[in-house]
Image 1: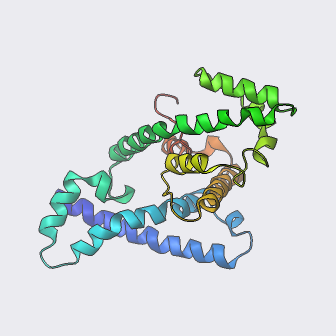
Image 2: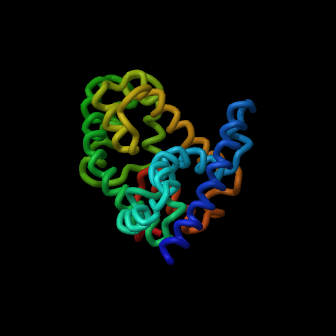
Length: 234
C-alpha cells in the first residue's frame, strides 16, 4: 500500500509539472525574451522536465495495461532511480541519487580538463595566456583558482579556442557526457542551449534577490545542476 500511495502521489505531481512545462514552453515560443518573464523554478522545470518525461514514460505506459500493476510496483520499488524521477522520490532519495549522478559526472571531468590543457599552446602570445596557464596549473594540482581570474580568461571562450564553434569532437563529446546528454544530433547547439538556460537561471536568481533567498535544498539543487558538490560544504 505504501508503494502504491507514493506512486499515485508521484503521478499527480508529475502530471501537474508536465502540464506546467508545456505552458512554459508555449510562453517561451510565443513571447520575445520569454525567459526574463519566468521565475527560477519555472526555468529549472523547463530544463529538467523533458528528462523526467522520457525516464518515466515506459512505466506510466506499462501501468495502464491490465494487471500490469503486479509488475510495475515491484519494479519501481526495486529500481526507483532507474525507472522513476524526482516526483516519486523522497527528499533523502533525491539527495542520494543526485550524489550518484555527481560521481558519474566526475568520470568526465578529467577528459574535459585534458581537452582544455591540450589547447593551451594555441593561446601562447595572447594576453590571457599567463593567467589561463596558472588556472590550469591550479586545477591540475587540485586547487581552486579565484573567480576573478577565471573571469579574466572569458575572452578565450568567446572565440578560438574554447567557443563551441572551435571545440574539436572529443571535447564536445566529453562535455555532453559530463552533463548527462546524449552524443547524437545537434551536439554543439544543444550544449549552447543548455549553457544559455543555466545563465538564465542565474539571471532569475539575481532578479529574485540572490543566493541568500534560496533555501538549503534549493541551493543544493542549484549546485547539482552545475556539477558542483554541495554536500558538507554549506
